[in-house]
Length: 289
Length: 66
Image (cartoon, rainbow over all chains, first blue to last red; front, side):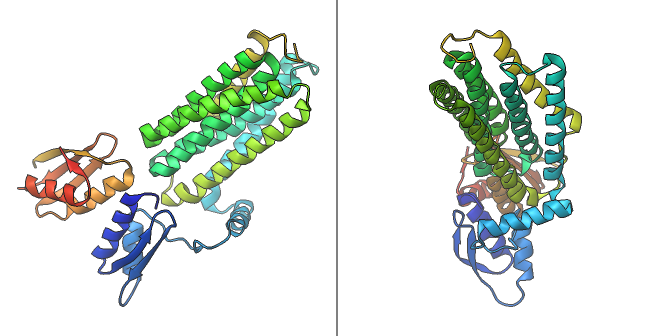
């Protein structure tokens, strides 16, 4: 439950099943229900209304939920099929992209590390987009906004920071902003204008801030920062994928993006970033100039 | 089988659609209901469905019929 409509819907479902709701909170994710006799009809009514009754109580620590998920992921349980496909495609695509970059550009050049970061960012952002698009019809409003915001901001941060480091603040900001806005909008629109707005705004913020950070850090451990920054964003995107699995994944089966489409998406993002890195104007103030 | 479409203001998510479908579905004569929050519309299918009752159900669920 995420909003007032969810509370009303659950209340209606419970009342139709012959019970009454004493207390309900979408923000806290619970309902206190007064009933007599068998509760299975009430549970069925709530589930039919589109909500899941968590096996884990709301007070279960997130760490416990995560350890359960990791166990299911490793054991290859059917519920984790799409998120495992996302992980497998991401690793395979990243390796292919790295091999292609090495084949095209040969021995390491001054942009090599940033090209690898581009490929890594492309598969991480691409994975989030693929999962979000697969589950788009299962998102409620709040989840759709969260997905649009996270994808828009992470994409803006990552691509803005990479191009900011290689080309300077102007090209980095513009590129990061455009990529973040486009991807944030594309993913966020699944939940209507609010999601689209979240995606657009996050793209503007992430793109401009990513580029600003790397330009400002050029003479202060940029290499170490970039590694931490990219890894931090990958962690955020991994969290987003888990969120999609945890909430939307329980609301029905969906078909995940075919591997070739996934590869094409990551390839497009990487190629675009590398092209900008190599052919767009370079600011004389960057250390890679 | 006649279909009636009602414009509804205030829907913002799939939960709103389900809520209206559930409420309008209880009106006598209604065979099926399809709400679309993106279009802000509810399509009601059934025999001799009272439009006033549908609008009352929409208002009762917290939305505004137009």
